[in-house]
Amino acid sequence: MSDSEIKFPGHLGTMKVKIHPDTIGKLRTVTVSKMPDDRYYASLLIDDGIEQPESSNEGKTIGIDLGLTDFAVTSDGSKHQNPRHLKKHERNLKRKQRKLSRKRDKTTSKRRKAKLAVAKVHSKITRVREDFLHKLSCKTVNENQVIVVENLAVKNMVKNHNLASSISDAGWGMFCTMLKYKAESQGKVYLEVGRFFPSTHLCSNTLLPIAKMALSVREFDCTHCGQRHDHDVNAAINIRNEGLRVLALGTSVTALGGDVRPKPYGYKSTTVEAGAVEWGSPYQW
Image 1 (cartoon, rainbow, N blue to C red):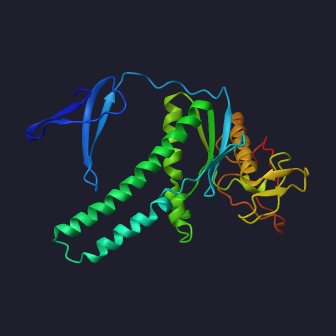
Image 2 (image 1 turned 180 degrees about the horizontal axis):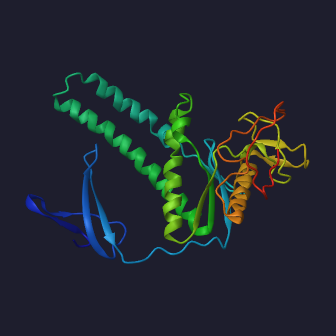
Image 3 (image 1 turned 30 degrees about the vertical axis):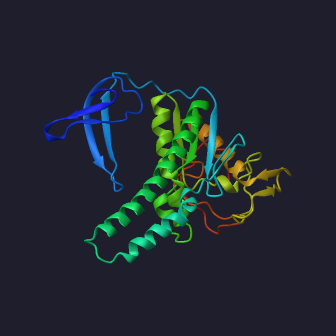
């Protein structure tokens, strides 16, 4: 293997390639994959001999609230707009799919060309989505030492047919995966708080519960502290604070006691619930 070609055994011979980034180390394996758009990719497994650094939580901590209106809102107030890649290419994709549907005979070359055209549009959407996620995850990891996000159940969320397409297009799971391995490779901390942690139902100043609001409400006036909060920034701050609490206590248990769904605002139980109490939690309902 060189910087511009890879030599394969057998009849394949030597093939010209574009390698990103520069490879340093001993090559172990090469896996070649053919994509639906007739592109070939070679995955290189290289042993660079560098040990993974020990993780440290000394430094800046950031909480990230993922959404659809804004893809990511951070605890320091930064908002990253959702690019909506599928929507940008939706018109072109529908046009190519209509042409494919008209080609009824599956053995003709015209149908194969139409099918390839559809695959190229899907490949374009995938590549621009990955490019956006790689750039944002690199920026986030480079600027922070501890990254805290919610543990989202994406597989369950896509069961909502009204939002399934938008959730799949956003790529939350891929983004969190990128954050995790990039943070660990630099000795930084990636932390997920429980999916039932009420990040949107707590005031970030007083830590007191707030009334449930519709998703269309982007700002609200807190009845406890009297301040006006941005809905997503408030949630991101709560996620960051919960991450700091988990790191300080050295436990992965959330403030509400694991996977217990929080009760709605104003709920009063007529029975006494038995359960473990975690000392030091600031969230007492």
